[in-house]
Length: 342
Figure 1 (cartoon, rainbow, N blue to C red):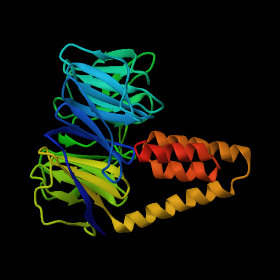
Figure 2 (cartoon, rainbow, N blue to C red; figure 1 turned 90 degrees about the horizontal axis):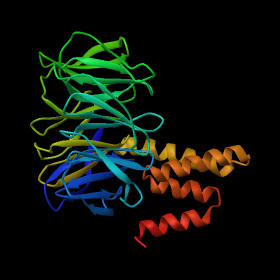
Figure 3 (tube, rainbow, N blue to C red; figure 1 turned 180 degrees about the horizontal axis):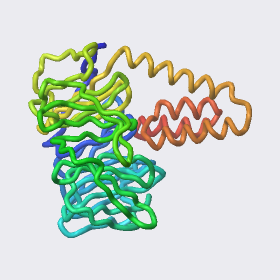
């Protein structure tokens, strides 16, 4: 299975961070935030007082960290929601929360939990935090501590936390579809399916002693961006078409068939797999076909919810097709006008 560069984009200055917004790409370059659509056209640009060092997307909102603060922006136009929140020393990492809300880590070793609108709910002291890994469900959060060990907190009425195991990992990915990619002290890469008290399965998947910088789980498995800038598949039947050995400093997944490699100097490359693109088209055609034959009100309501969600996630083409299948001409025209920048 072959991946190749479908298009490129050059940022006006150095890039400090990036994240996916549905199938769109958010870039922090200098003091500006830029949202690019699937064709790397600029949807909006916003200037901020400080450089953004981390960002995450959920439910039509983008959480950004800059200076000592946490701020929420609207996906539609980049405008700010509320006044933001700050903490002494600043925040270090951010994750959206299942069902709505956010969790942030700070440089003083605390977890900060916020609701969907950015209002603080609670904080939990957990000593050092190297990286937020992911959620098992709305209440159970996993992270890597400053010693390299994995821990889990239960954020309920009575907060609790526990050590998953004593093993030390030199690097841990974000959780994706219930799975985590990790590097052990001897350089081996492991894939595991964790639960709040241990592992459902854990196995070695690569012995090349790569130095992971970032990872993405696509429709055909894990890809790892190494510290030397090389992009490496974790299965043997995949490869990339590129003459470049240094592809960048960030790896961002945009869809099952699309990912972006980004260099700090500003070069963004969008990668696609033709084989996976075909599967994505089949999925899209199936969803649209289901919408067209829906006659029951409950089915139409579900399709409308799906269209709204697609719009919030930035999947504008899918949203247009679903609105069109429901006969919602005004919504179709609104999104088409937005794509034209009117």
